[in-house]
Image 1 (cartoon, rainbow, N blue to C red):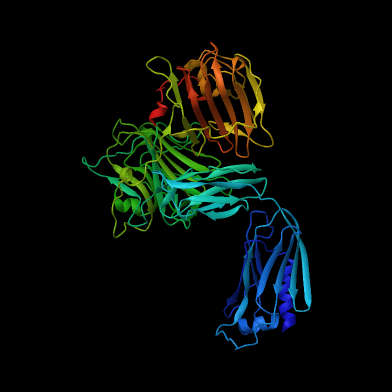
Image 2: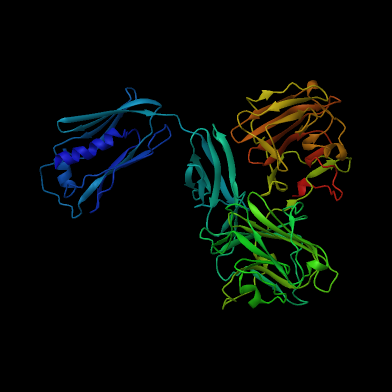
Length: 626
């Protein structure tokens, strides 16, 4: 019997389990012996280590103490870097204590230890075991907070880190920390029932240092009760109200239910240009086959093909030419109705589809109703991860059905969903991202503010949020000074495999201009700010103004694990007056953050340019009012 005990203890020792300052050991009662376990396998200076030891040969704790020579204790010598686990005794020979529950093992935890090589000694009566092990420095720490839009912390949010990064859960105040292996790359995704999160995930590349402030905002969604994701616009008192809106349906883990969110839009999320035209007549449909092994989903069912109906819907198990919208018709098949109405593509407009890397997209452009000269433009995006997005621009039809159907018939307890009211409205996806401070009546008003541009799924547009700050988000200390003269620029090459992006274009390098901007395809020494110059090339204008770093101040660049930051500190105008401190952070996941502290210039341009020239419909964006 004792040999079996010693054998199980030796497994513990050979695996290198250690103990230290914060220790705890206790007996485990029960009928089922635990398997030996220890976590984490490779301890660091930041770890508590948890373990269990099977001792199921004993009837109870009293007999275990008698056989091993007492209750175990842990002692640590931090100078000699030695740890000892003692079984001292013999146990008290007094009155016999009989626990009604058998002893099924020993459990405990220990830590923390300083970096280096340690020796572990375990003493049994007449026997000494020993083992050596390494304690390493802690790996990079990713940390942040998950909160509501009002600032309250959200506890119990699970954050899953891909590529073997593990997971963690927020505390009651919404804070979380997660250590990842040095050099880890992957994504972090928050999840909790009845919430959607912005951003929906964060991406990381070659993490080599701590990354703080990785925050998320959680928005509550309706509980899964009597939401059939369908709205019927059926009368003069109930007319279509989703023009210039986009609604995203995100499936639950099992795919049987969805959460919804919406955004205001000014153009379709996916540009239909280059798509394949579908030759659809009146009350017609056409089969579309996806390439390769890709599939789309609806209510947990996957399909490698689907049918596009001329009357504003997609079906899956069979084609449909029904033109008279009704709830029984909508629910008789698995269906996505973007605008189930009697439309006639053969009388005008265009229906097309295109397959991208992550989705299949069907677009109805300027399609009229049957017998009418009106125009209706809308789009269905079916993402290969199960999400479904419906988007509408100008809709001149008054009636129609919008929503998702599981094909099981009209639910017995069906209640119409008021889509425009029920689903939370996310920050708007904007089309123009530029403000021109150009006169005494329109002076710079973004001091002590930071603005985050968060790219949409297809990376071609952004949602924008802003908040007040008292210091720059990235400390420029330790950055590389950029030797910039007046009206000058320098080339910056990113280290490793890092890349930054703007409007979906990816770059491993960029140009820093002395006059407060970043360009990508070429350097620029322009000093006279104008909308034409700003929009002439792909550009981030943090403060496009005639500045002169050679006359005072410092411009520096600093690359971190998840971003590169360029900072202008106390840079003066060309006239030699004033002091201006501002920063751009280009995150490796596509986000762009602009921040300003003290700004003494009055004029200048702030924003992003896609390099396609001043948009015809350009309207200046007032960032301070976001």
